[in-house]
Amino acid sequence: MKCYIDSREKPQAIEGIIAYFDRHGIEWEKKKLETGDYMLEGRPDVVIDRKMSLLEMAHNMLTADKARFYREVRRARESGIRLIILCEHGGIKDLNDVSKWKPKFGRASGKRLADAIFRLEVSYNVPTFFCDPRSTGRRIVELLSGEDHGDEDILRSE
Image (cartoon, rainbow, N blue to C red; front, side):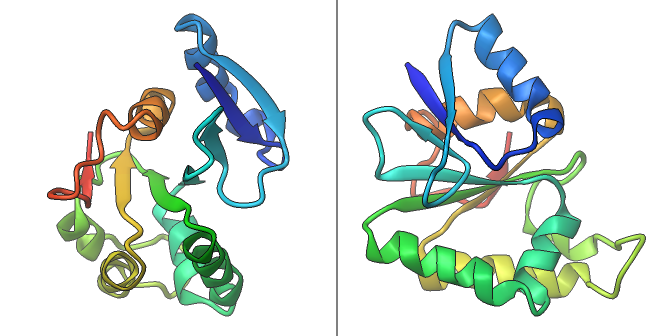
């Protein structure tokens, strides 16, 4: 198994992911991906867009920056790519938890973000998963290899 990592991912942000890959014998290579941040070799039809926190998701989905985010979502759909969002945020398990989230900075609301995540799934068939940052490498492998994204339960955590 070989995982491609988008070359724009910051080295310090992916240290734990690379360490997981190395410990488990998963080959990896950094290269520019047109859509998403992670993809398995031979499976360009499924990609993961990793978000490092709910704050990053709120910025992508609720601010003026949302146009860029939704262009990527539409580009994936038009290209026949299954886009999966993986949000690293300890303590968040589902949309109910998101709706209760109160950011330390900014004016985003957990309820607005939960609504936006739900609309993303319904409108674009883009599921969102949540994980603790310590388990991101494992979740990437599970989601990309198809071990853990059944259509019946898409908005869930580990």
